[in-house]
Image 1 (tube, one colour):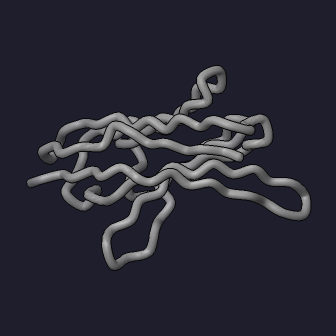
Image 2 (cartoon, rainbow, N blue to C red):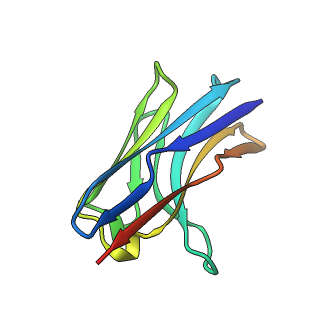
Length: 119
């Protein structure tokens, strides 16, 4: 079993910064991809950024140059540093941890943390 808990959301004005954290506990040795997603009510959940066990990182075009994803392996913690926030960044942000093998994968989601950016 894997537990995923996000924290760090809040309300900021446009141009501000926030840092999200995601602590993963339980059977974490098999986790090889971690990611941040976000979702606005009524819209599909979208990928913000992900990082794999080899350190490869991908960002959504909308956050490139403003958001930075990082991982502390020792603490089983994932971070998302968000700068120059815009009102369109307002969403519930979710952390996802994935364990994948050649034939199947298991993903675990956190409960989400709200980020609100006012203009």
